[in-house]
Length: 66
Length: 260
Image (cartoon, rainbow over all chains, first blue to last red; front, side):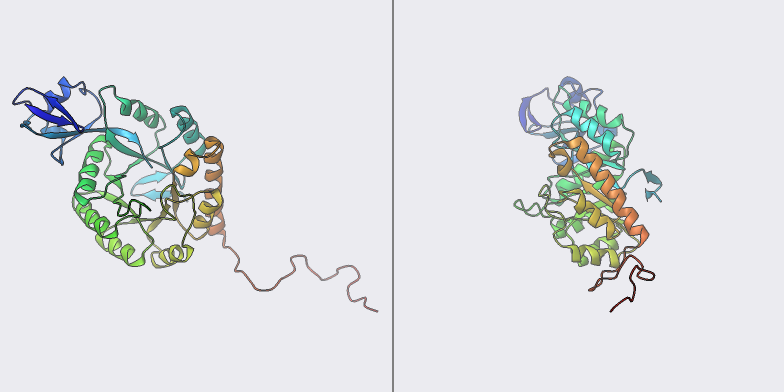
């Protein structure tokens, strides 16, 4: 199925959860926070949150800021 | 007396931004020189190469409290979601809430700011609102539960200094017990000192150091000016007068009353 990660379209397996997505995409163990379709998904819910066709995922990390 | 925010003692009244330095090494040296009380940070899209992780390693090494921001947000929902993500990543409920309303001046949107502040306080955040210098907005934010107010000096990155010293003075007078921070628009150390002499509790700046010819020296200059401004405020600055008053005693001056 098709999803977008940080604005870029990707194809992934159906029934993928957020924890598995982070693993597949190389974010495992990194300090990131995730939002799904504009809603924050805390780490404690990554495993139970299943992605759907068209899901928009934001993966954010610490960055310079003023 | 050092500045406290909740139970955290801040080592300086300079809050330093971490963006737009010429290199990570200059950022590191500037932090070293400034010894700031707080470092502001942000969240951005991460790539698999982990550029954010490297930046975070530099910041963590200083053991200085961080203040995450919601920079660049224009909508309430976007700002609230960014704050929630920042809370998880930085393990802190502090948030510099920036909700912009105009892309020419980067002026905060006062209505959206108040709305987002109420939502975030309800979710347990300690909100540091980046705001205009409007008195009534400050009152509403205080009523919403803000202990800290961060009026702008001038538009972000403009270096104009304190555009409206009168408004800033009135805020200080009307909110003697709030922690007041001038955030944004500072260009020169004298701007920061002027705000501190008014009784502001701290100054948040970024561009004035990051874009200086020599950011490391400028970081040091700001640390000194903010310290000087605070000491001056605490020492009681004399009231200006219209006429001159001799500072050297006239009594026993040579040739005193020896008119012909």
